[in-house]
Amino acid sequence: MEHPIFLVIAVIVAIVLQQVANRIVRNRVRSSIESSGGEVYSLRRSTFVPGWLGRRKRKALFRILYVDRHGGRRKAYCKASFWSEDVYFTEDSAIEPPRVKQSESPEDKARLRNEMDLLKRNQK
Image (cartoon, rainbow, N blue to C red; front, side, top):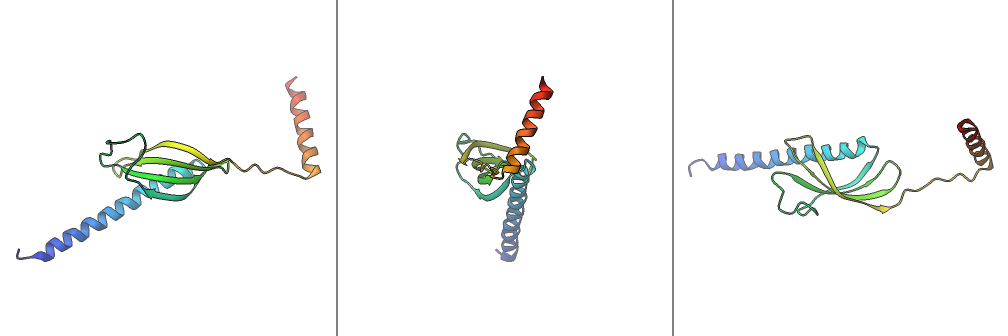
């Protein structure tokens, strides 16, 4: 081989392009969850996703841990592609239920009781 530098450059370019594509797909998955009010705290590539055995075909597979808009911690798997905008989720399950913020203030309880009474009167 007379010019091995071209082979080295081609390998470097291929690695850089793969990293750029991976970053784009990760951002697409992250924005999909954040657009519904969630917050991602772990997004990792996965070689196996339940339900998609043998159907990879140029798709990036991820295991995601996130907090949904209600404050519950969730685990999900997803499939996304560099070539399309679609993000497919599977095996989305709760790890920890949402944390309900309960008011201990008597003023808040009285205000909520008055609002409930008003709503009940308006429904009749």
